Every structure is written in C-alpha cells, then in structure tokens.
Image (cartoon, rainbow, N blue to C red; front, top):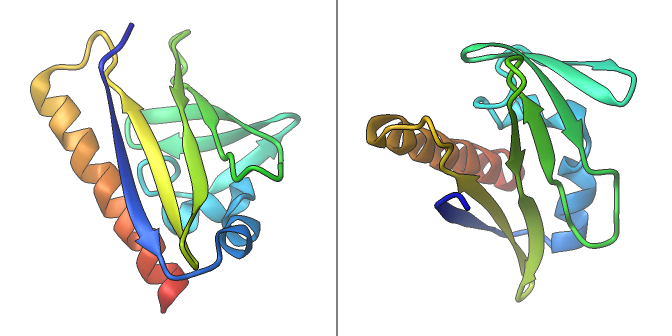
Length: 131
C-alpha cells in the first residue's frame, strides 16, 4: 500500500456542468501543467504528452455520469501511476478532488514538490472556470 493524500478545490459551477467542460483529455493541458505542459496527442486508446520528466502515455477513464476523471500515467519505464480525480457536488457548486499516491522511490522533497504542483494546478482550474 502506498501513502496517499487527497487535495480538493471548491469551484462555483454546477458539478455536472463542470464535469462536462473538463472531462475531455484535450482539456487537461489548459490547467494540469503537471500532466501535459505541451498538450496531448491521441494515439488509439492512449494519449501522449511531453511530461516534466520526459514522454508519457496516459489512459483516461471514459466519460461517465459519476464525475470520475481517473487516469493512468505510464512514465515510460514500465511504471504506471494511478491518479484518481473526481468532480462531486458541493451544494450548488462542485468539489474537484485529486488523490496523490506517494510512489516507492519518492523522497520527501519530491512528494512535497508534487503536492505544491497539484495545488497550483487545482487553483489554475478554479481560475479558468470561474473567470
């Protein structure tokens, strides 16, 4: 089992409407800099990106009625990182929640850097949607 932390941000938008805006993989680069700084290219069932540490392959959960936007990131070295991502109702708005699993080779500094990155990306999503 891996240690995990879940981060969330409240967004002033109906959760279903928000999900419909952001569930598509091609939308992720607009706010998720940690996933795909230079955009995504589709290749069959996968998406390719130039990640912060090199090329990556990503599998996204298909569109669904539950607000699930999980993705599996193949780092190119045989490792696949699971990233649970959800949009849920929060009153008249939405809560976007992302869980970060601390990988076995991740030291404290790297884990802290990933936490900062996730929170920065969630704030970018909020600014993008609410502006």
